[in-house]
Length: 238
Image (cartoon, rainbow, N blue to C red; front, side, top):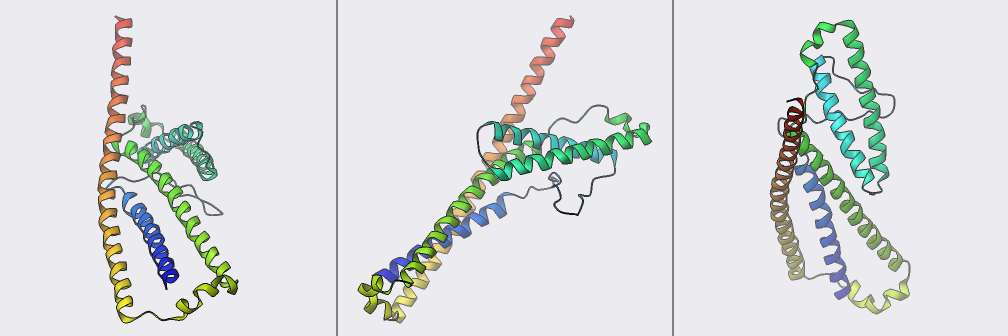
């Protein structure tokens, strides 16, 4: 009976952690009102590029910002094949957008009078950058939890194939749970679910605040650097 209880508690714990990680990804990732960068297409389907000059310029700025972030992540020494593949996909999309921009400019130069200067990064772009980092971190944790669950399932299957190893618990394993025990496990599971939900909501709230603060700090730092550069150049000209 003890072995059965321990096994059930392990499964409940891992299942709660696993579902909590997925819930965190689902609630953390969306951004309100901000249109995320286009995702490169895979297979035969081609990504639908914007046709309006302003939309192309804005999308190009987002993709180049994302590309710069991916380059920084890879240069930091983090080995992630998925991230490297994403970098090449984004690079191809940047090339496509630049080609489309040049083609439109050749057809109608007047449409680009207001777009001579590329837009600088906005706060939402910095937030997206940090959300990407959060997504990568959570993906790694989910894969780690999934590996632990797979290992636990493998151990269970091995025990099932070795009757001798279960002989010590044969009597207890064949005994059904009493109604009180069933009720106890149901209440314990419900309690863990409520705790998981509460903790997930708190973590989501705090991580969103952190992402927003990091984005504001990075944007202010960039603005200060640009202001210092402008002051320095103005002094040289004077």
